[in-house]
Image (cartoon, rainbow, N blue to C red; front, side, top):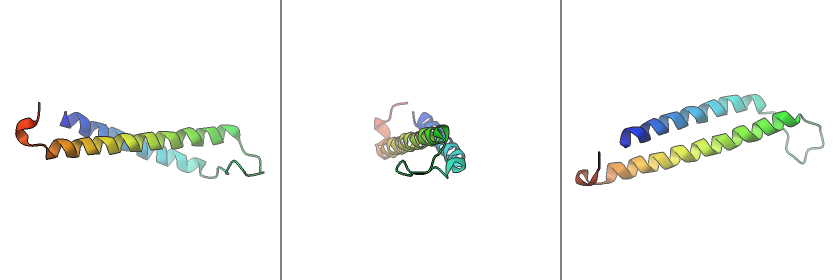
Length: 80
């Protein structure tokens, strides 16, 4: 169980890093209240990548909390 959680943290961190690097390309997206025209597909892609970032971050955070809880449990209570 612990090994799977570590793999989940590693994969989630990789997804988070990849989304962050790709999102750097879309850094010139303007706020919705802006009067300047902007590409709709760039705005939607930036929104989806930002959502993926937040989801990956929450998955990593929950997995890290689960790892900490598993490590703090007494050794006799752990299941294989």
